[in-house]
Image 1 (cartoon, rainbow, N blue to C red):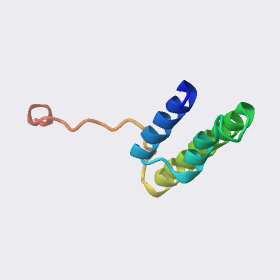
Image 2: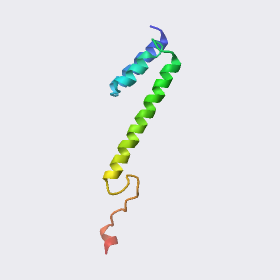
Image 3: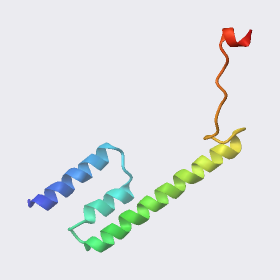
Image 4: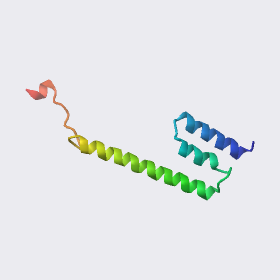
Length: 84
């Protein structure tokens, strides 16, 4: 096995251990095997953009269902001494 394939194999293994989904694993597994590098890069960028969009959508849904935006400041509770 050449060095590039060993690196790809270890990257693939690391992704599996991290719980990566099959779509991402397929893209990585295709690198230098049956897809040109530009197609693999395009697939990775598309996958990353879709993942970011999904996370933003989940955050937006959470903020709509909660009484305040998740990133707004919360007033710290007063200590007993400050309450007097």
